[in-house]
Length: 281
Ligand code: NAP
Image 1 (cartoon, rainbow, N blue to C red):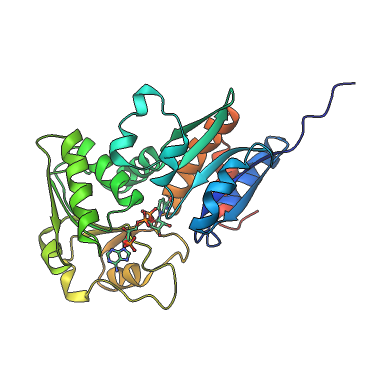
Image 2: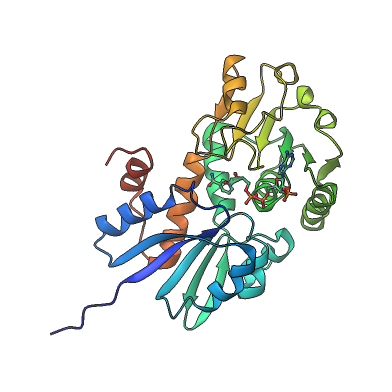
């Protein structure tokens, strides 16, 4: 009799990580394709990350998603294929897989965000304001520069981070206009076509709304990378003004489908994963 393949573990490592809906969609996909695997949440404090990463094979972990605040730190732990060397400049890896004893790094946020954005609006020639300059924001800025946006203004509470993000993008897209700004007012949102929240502000019900209603022009598109809660204060405010919006749920789906393919070499079952995310199965 064939030996039963042992249970493979996948998961998400971050801090915090408990808000994530990734287990729902990946476990539904494993079940639908009869793959003997489980997706778990690993909420690890910074001081515990190193030990955790060195215990992966012992714990039967074959692949992970990486979230706040470890998308940069994980670069020290992985090898990148040549076509993904630019992730060292973007400093963001969100998916790792064990391949022939080597941990390889990928970024599925980039194609995931790109696909969902383009289903909502055409980014060509758009003027964009980005809140946040962490891993998610740098993936977003890469997509926009690559897609021919006209300009980006980027703000982070940590000025050093927005400056660094701007120079990373400039090193990859030499003539692209990206300006780090010192405060939200300087984002000039009323001159923009697209506002993107890539900060974690909005994850908690007690979080403030970073934007004031009068900053939002009526023909703006507001995209919040946060998907849980489905409607952040920012999205409520925009909707109240009749502004078009999207949360990050479809981005989560698309990046998750790509991670699933990397881990299993199988096409991800989109409908099963989408229904799981929407609580429909
Ligand atoms: P990150 O690397 O920690 O970056 C977040 C950045 O926002 C940090 O630089 C942080 O600065 C900054 N920030 C915090 N509070 C701020 C404020 N009040 N004003 C301006 N900047 C502020 O996190 P990330 O991985 O980019 O994720 C950001 C958000 O996007 C999270 O909510 C995450 O869940 C979401 N996300 C969603 C998807 C999806 O598939 N939908 C994918 C990726 C990310 P400090 O570090 O100094 O606090």
